[in-house]
Image 1 (cartoon, rainbow, N blue to C red):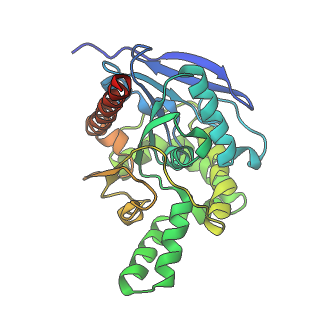
Image 2 (cartoon, rainbow, N blue to C red):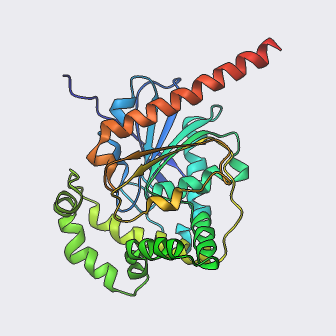
Length: 308
């Protein structure tokens, strides 16, 4: 089997600094934008993107503070509104006239929910594939509703997710998270992923920096959104890839999203949080199938409109 072609690397100017892009496939094909999570960078898609590049133009970018993208100076520069501005800059650069298919994992998916529920981006996103990263506003509603109706089942769900989310509270502590990333997590990240997640994660020169900077994603966004949730309704079809052995995100968090998403599909997979590394072919297959279904409907709608 021939070795997959490496991505084409480039930089674009975002609203606050440069953003590093990787591209595969042929421009002009339906466009998929891949968005990585924490503490990853766009290279985390290097095994998945080539599996899609035969039929799609695929773009991945380093989120601000990660990989080869610029590093903000202030916590406020990591808010979801600034991340949305970065996404807008990317799609304006690579697909100014064509709606994109957004595919995201972990914190990339948290961002993706912000994008797909942002009214000003309506029509710019053709579909959203979400994995292991919920909408923070939806999580707040989920928690409030279960605490308002404290049945044993509801309390058990809240307790389980609270245990899975222990690291969020830890990341809000002063100094300790940074010390842990510098001394242990950064240098040992690939080994830890192989041991804890059975995920083949290659070493990366920016790994320690990515972990340190990305802590600000939690500090800038978690409490404001959980304490003051907004009404967030998706304006594009959403497909959920739900790892059943996720150590950090409970499958119950995405169990009742139909009131927020008019076109919702869901696929459960026997995998851990880093299903993108554990089962890249399965993940890519889910993305391919969903995007092709959406593209087929879009073509039919255009043909019907033209005939009318």
